[in-house]
Image 1: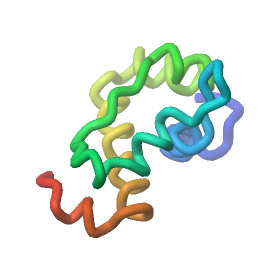
Image 2: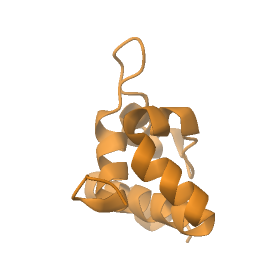
Image 3: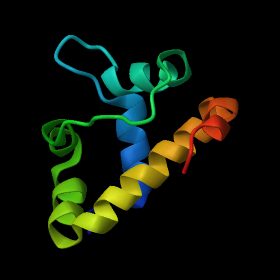
Length: 94
């Protein structure tokens, strides 16, 4: 799909952990770290942020298979939450 060897799941996890906005903040990582505090159950991601991070991987997957794209994002977010706050993830319904 692209020259990135890790694939879409690894690339999306990297995006969540490292994407910086114009002010140099980590908006998605900050929200993930606050999931249990805010009792959050979802994460809104701006598609333009994704494509500015890696246009090839995210645009291609979204165009070719939108359902797989959304499922991949869901799987990665759960994986990150499992690593960061497993107790909170256990309280959230599938």
